[in-house]
Length: 192
Image (cartoon, rainbow, N blue to C red; front, side, top):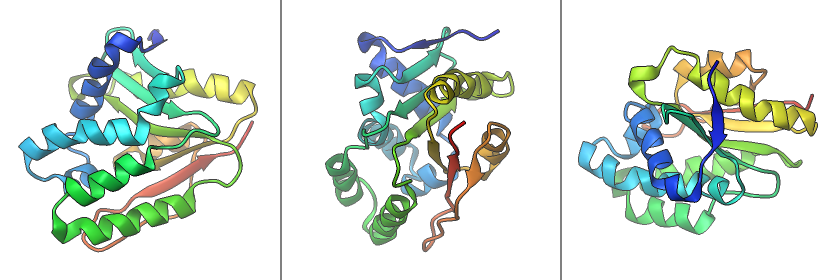
């Protein structure tokens, strides 16, 4: 059985590092930064802007051995919009900037209007994929969300992950396709 725990404040950088490893081959993220150096430099800023508030609300989880992690934003807590806007305007190539801003608009349109839990990031160190760590991380948070009768939401940036989310009750809401960007899949899981 995999032990899941909450990230301590001093472990924030290490928990972000898991996401950096996990998303190194993600289609949408690497569309943003195809150059490895730029990816390594800027992706942690995206983790902070999009999911960093999970750390502040005790909803940043890791496996006991730091082989995987998840960042959940609780109801009423959203991404840092100013940080995301800054990343879009200063950290991605101008050639894709307008497409990224349209993606952000479509993502905002897909977010449930009712209170919900938002899975901002979930990732496993690539050498540990296939060991059930992603499922364990999802189960850990969904147990609490279900106990509270909450709705859960996420945007999958990798079609290979859809079956994992679907096994956990998530359903694709729509597909976001803009310009040269890979397809994104907003998904929601009804309250139980």
